[in-house]
Length: 499
Image 1 (cartoon, rainbow, N blue to C red):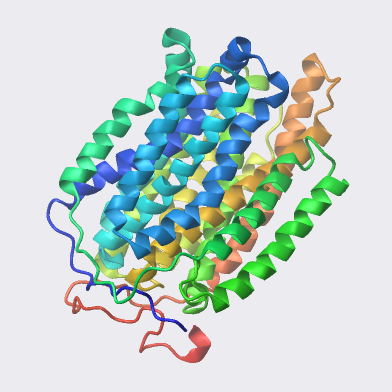
Image 2 (cartoon, one colour):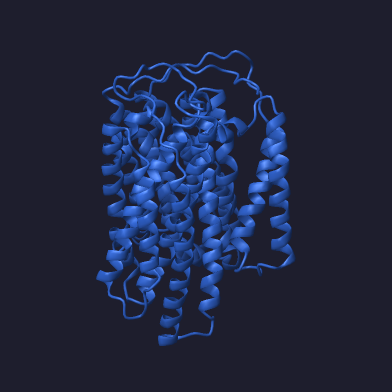
């Protein structure tokens, strides 16, 4: 194993003003979470102005693809260089792309600028979680989980509301310009408030260009296959099968390259050092499937079957998202106080499975109250699972690998969501024929929604099995523990069978 080209200073307890520091990081993270939902609401108006209806899917696909490809690159750059400066650079890229997208005069220009936006968004997600992992020891991180959960909930629920309001009153270009004031505040805030020690480099950083190229091709193929399968092309078409083959072969080639690279993009030691890391990634991928699927198909069910307006369907998601914040806050405080955490992903995945099964029973006669209660079950499950899974991953790696590790968690959550939405789209398309109208269409949408959440329940059941396999080991940075650097990939209290 090749040592990291830089040494990491010891993790110290968070300072008293860490909440103020994290607020700036959270504001930047909110940019990426809000953007897709805001732009999605504005898309009908954009198409009416720019045309290019046949290319509308690329406005989303280009963003998602660029985000997935760039995430591990930003994460590794943060490990190799100054993490703060790399994060600020991603914010600048995102803001520049937002300005250009708002000024686009053709669909081709908009798609190109959306890809650039996606590149910046990859750094926002990877950098934010890596900074949180650097600033706050895992044992203390639970105290701040409510902030992270609130930002995620605001991004999911607030996106459609902000998008509808801005587009209706100011025009679609402000769906992009709205990022500028928030982003500038976050940029200045982080620059002034965030103070990180400069890691001492023992060698000149070496960029894993071959790994970047292979990973880009692999992720690109996987995301495109997930996006197009069942919609643009059949699952068994040669295009989808070819993309799937490239993704499989690319994964194998990437693993070989990472084992040989002097400074790998995604170090194998991150995945093999402790079994909790891949388990945490699996849990996050499952949550991504449920979160993306719920955000996309529950509003459609509410508007089509229950007669809600577009804005009203956003408000009707509150029973889903408010419990996320509450559960995350409770779990975080209990974890910080007791050091115990395994119970939460176990309970969370159990609630997710139960909630998804309940949502799978919805029909044309389901009341909004009943749907809200079942959504609350899913929200509680996400709250108990999502942040704890991230803490599992953060506690399983060296601080010097935090950027790559958090990039991996964001990458797999994105891929999980993309693949899940692709499968859901195929199930929904089969259940809802294009010729359905009126009452038949309402019944078809209800049937498609049932199929989606029945499948999601199966994914959550697998996640429950993963949660049971988690090994509860001491969290770094607990009260009374020495604040010194220690190898988190090999804990003295573990036997080889526990790793």
